[in-house]
Length: 180
Image (tube, rainbow, N blue to C red; front, top):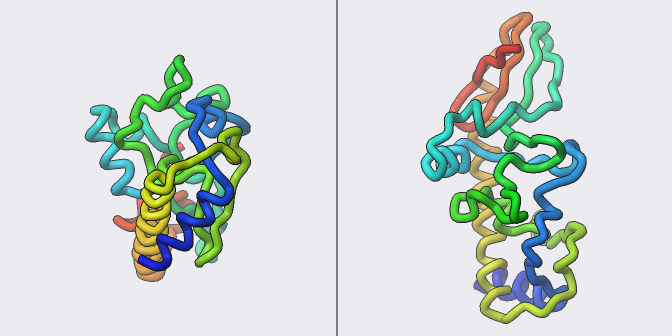
């Protein structure tokens, strides 16, 4: 609990109020990528009825393997014309209740025990202690989920060989062939 209190205090010091402007949901594709894990993809599929291929693409930075194949880790929400595909015309999130961890905690993230803050028009705005506590708790849960995903991916990656001439993506559920 002490950790959440410390994070909450820092959030209150910086201040934050979401302006629901959609600025975090759009921009250059490279800087506005939303990386999602299989459980997050599942929540979005359940909320929307869409297929995985309609929601995500493999993370677009590929590494060449020793065997002559290519691989990447994880998935990113699709982006059209510089906007998240779930950013509605009213600049609101169409999957708000199923949104990924990064969206739930933006503009804050944890790097170890250090809180990092991305650019956002809502920084500096008043936040209640209760809202800051809830955001701090969410940040800790996000960090735990990301660490769990990373450990599972590492295990999967170390037990697979990228096939020669193939392109694959690794996530916590396996190695997936990428076509096209």
